[in-house]
Length: 391
Image (tube, one colour):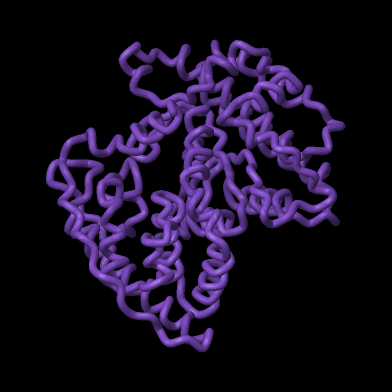
């Protein structure tokens, strides 16, 4: 069985193909996730939960078929316990999905750590959540016990926040939802601007942001990005304003420009969280120069195809000579200049619709130094995450 992209990743290409969920099945799954996080009290959330869990169950069983036959019976037994023994009377349906996704992430973290032939050196180089030992010391396969373990975790307690979907969830309440498959950058930005945060449920070790992560490490990684976006979330009126701007772009511009705007927002509010007063040049005083200079702050990840280099459209990618995953800085800068220009043009047009003159100004920031060629540079996110978790 050929399955690709079984680790949930951001897909930058809006015309993507592949992924464990495909076509109508993926479309239905995304529709269900949007319903589950819609804050609409009129919906039958138990029915939505059950259909989502059915899709997750099918997906994980298909993954098991790709693993060595001698490993399957024990994994299937654990999956059966996880998927069939949850508390069906729990009316916190969002948390139910999150608990089951955390159980699956724990299962496959143990499997990939212990059953795939990793050396001690390799294990030490793969990021795992700092709460891993705490989780596996408890009875994590039991739904009620795992719920308590997550609630006691400084990292994962957000997954079992007491939502009451049937009574409506206020817009100001952040919603977390365990998520399988792949997510487009458009879907990610839309969810962020609606205070919805998908947490990837993985069955494998894979590269993210320039480092390798275990499945539970990936769950942790997505929560980390939420925590890093605190300054954006707490800036009054920012997300509604950006939503209005983005709606303007999607109503008036073609797909390449829509993508350019989403990519800028992705780098500004998801990756680096530029939302302090002196950082918010992208809504206060955007110019081509200062938006471009801010974009180059992330140049180390944008040249790396193991990180955000895949966000650079193919026609702008030029590989370093003799390298299979590092792009030339010059080729990336061409695209960054283009999207900075597009962003400012769209912002000025949007501002004009509000009856305000297109804003100009904003001093040029110090030019980012040329990216170093050391692989240590490309592990910055992993180091930042480990430092953050050790506070």
